[in-house]
Length: 113
Image (cartoon, helix red, strand yellow):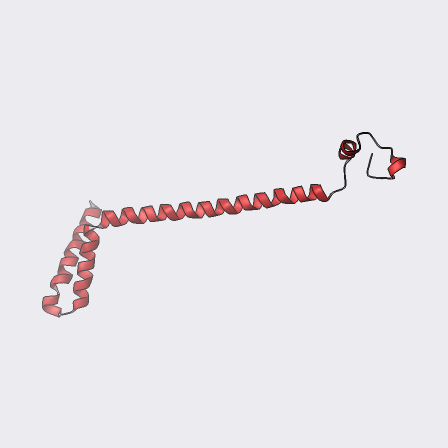
């Protein structure tokens, strides 16, 4: 009920602003009254469009945040791959390359255990 009375007051105010030109002769008050009445006529459409714009912006921001997250995750996995390639060979990799277990004396590798 309270909301309904506010709308009635705004409707009456817009009419008074338009009719005030007869007494005050100020065109700015008339334009303000016309803009208020146009807002009241199209308030549902304006509110729906603002909600859809807000929802679209929220989705875009969420996609940007997710893309930043996935880029960061990919860069860490690439760093792990680079670390594996640059590290010294483990015993398993040496066995796979040579085909047998090397003795520590022949190759003089201290990292092979």
